[in-house]
Image 1 (cartoon, rainbow, N blue to C red):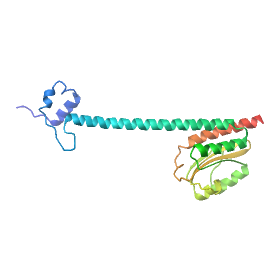
Image 2 (cartoon, rainbow, N blue to C red):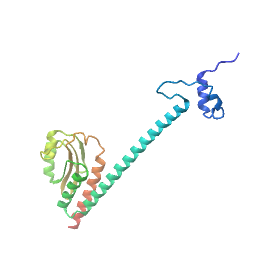
Image 3 (cartoon, rainbow, N blue to C red):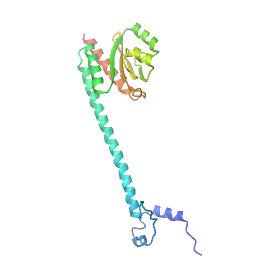
Image 4 (cartoon, rainbow, N blue to C red):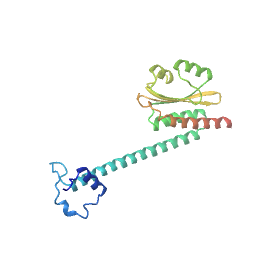
Length: 211
């Protein structure tokens, strides 16, 4: 007696021998395929449908890649212009004006400020905000209305990034504020703000040494 084949064994065999029907095309005419109205009615149509789905997936991935590349290129250009603007500044006041203008005009920031404080003023500000404002500190998030009101002097800000830098004997606070409470919830903005802070410190230091 012939042993009946397990359908699973047949399926595995066909998967291992994908070209089985290439040399046995006549068999295809003898096989039956499920025909459902509105669905692929043949093996060929099913293959075409799958290829189209794969093509659409690839197109979506490519579109996403191109859009991300454009966004990265745009950010690079804006960052380069910001850096050149800082390096082109002639004094502390000029730097403050340039940094505030660049962020508001090109980075979608609602509020931007760069202010310098004495040690005693920073200690007082730390007490009022409960934030550690030591050299190199960066704070990012949606802070309480009371803290934001103190830091941004009553301006309408709901989330912020704050970077601390040192210039001469003063402590500077570079603050970016947004009316959008969710804009600065993550840590993705800290690397960029740290870079800007380092550029500012370097330029301010060079201006001081040239005086």
